[in-house]
Length: 396
Image (tube, rainbow, N blue to C red):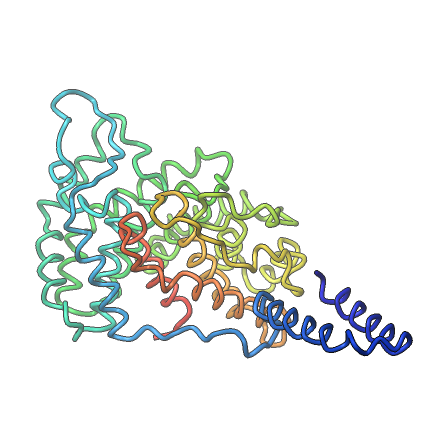
């Protein structure tokens, strides 16, 4: 029942009791009002500025250790495995570890890549984490020139042009960016080992983007905006001006004229990315501030009022043992990091900023308790999303 209607109903009934002098029924009516108000209070979305919003818990060494435990286990778990593998002949019917000596675990190649990113990120942030020695041992074993060369060779075989395009490409460059920004001997050693694979994916971006006439907007792996975000971050860190300029040009081609996002259609049933917010996150990186702010208001005209409401409402995950439904946990975390980014970019007095901040916190808190759900369907990848969300939120 809408709250405005309910208030009018209460006033009407009180006036009725007074006028008709039916005081005998009034205590029962009062009990009904109190019970209804209590229930409706629990189900309402917290209001703007409300203290009902639970704060985002910080990323501590203890919570980081839980995430590392998941990633450390899964990057070494070869089976079950969902290969994205075009078989050119009987000689290529091989095990995941034979095909991908670095990224053979975590159920699929891209999840294994961002599992390695999580391990590097946490080792940099928390060098005294209890699993530090184990993490170093795994990275030392995986990031060798010989094993990376085998990953590069895999890409150059026939029928591999679209392998992991562009989600896996993007996460590989995010992993390499993390290594390049690690001022430690082991970081420099592993970055040097992984660089040929990063270079191979940069060349794939440079080859593919001029040929990609239309962006892919679905909220899953091929999403173009997501693929460009991490690649642009890498290009700026690595000094790849050619890649940076290409991404900026294509992002403008794809998205600059967009207005009135159809965000009321989100989420799709297996989204783990928000098409609306990923696009906004990309354009935040591409456009100068004076151009981005009016673009954002045209793209999300209801932003100042927290509209559309479904974009600001965490997705309900009904079955975390289902590999597609659990994508919605990833959606909550990726929405959260996009909203944190946008809130940080807006002027402090912009009414949309606190709404985005609050919605980001709601989304994160809706999924963080379930990252370690006991179901491998989510556990093989969600910790990476949680850590990246914390990286953007700055809560560590």
